[in-house]
Structures are given as C-alpha cells and as structure tokens.
Image 1 (cartoon, rainbow, N blue to C red):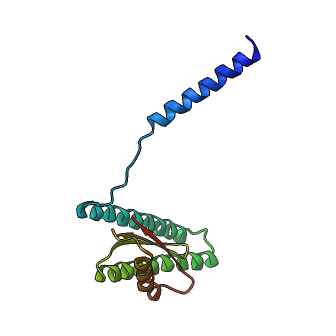
Image 2: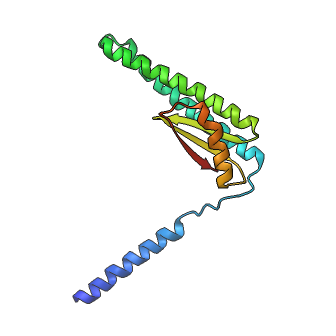
Image 3: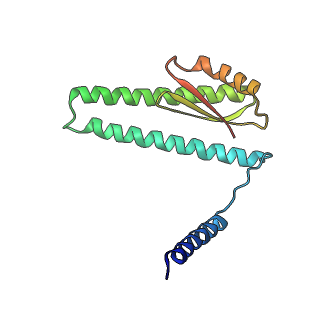
Length: 151
C-alpha cells in the first residue's frame, strides 16, 4: 500500500470517528420560561450542595483542631478559617434575604473572597445587574468581589 492511500484511510477514519462522537453528544437546549417549581428545586439543590461543602470543610478543620500533633499556631489558623466560614454563611443568608425582599430569587456562595451570586430572573439587563450589585455591595466586606450570574 502506498503512502497516499494510507494517509487517506487514516484521515477518513479520523473524520468518521469525530462524526460519530459529534452525533452521539446530547444537546441541551436552555429554557427561558422555567417553571417556578423548577427554579425552586434548582435553588434548593444549589443551597444544599453549598451547605454540604461548607459543613464538610468545617468538619475537616475541626478534625485538624482536635489532633494532638497540631501546633498552637496551626490551631489558631484553623480557628480563624472556621470563623471565616461561619461569617460567610451569615453574609450569604443576609444577601439571600435582601434579594428575596426585592422579589429576586437567587443563590449565594462565598468562596475565597468571591461572592458568587446566581440569580434566577427572566430579565437579564445591565440595569438589573446594577440593581442587584448595589443591593449586595453594602452587605459584604471591602476585600470581597461580586460575581453575578443570571440563570
């Protein structure tokens, strides 16, 4: 078999494999008019995941705290991390309450000084984003950054 035939067969096989892969992918179409029950269930799942993640981290830190091998300096560092997580939980609750008072459904998660806010609104405009950010800004510390996502 000559080199041209081998190159043709190789390229044809590659194109065929990529075509099969592309056809087998599932396409997800976004729905603009999501029913209220779906938004509520998505919010509940996201809140639960955030809470589980934070609780697991606190549990892990408490295990480090209870270890006899942990130095005093490390224990102080672990305690400050636990306090920061608890403080972030309270800030998250205040932000969600403020959003609900304005009739906005959203989920808030604070990680590494980034306030990730997922808002479930049909109106996705710069004005709405500005309103939400102005609502959140007084509730966070100066070293935190707001990340706003419309869903």
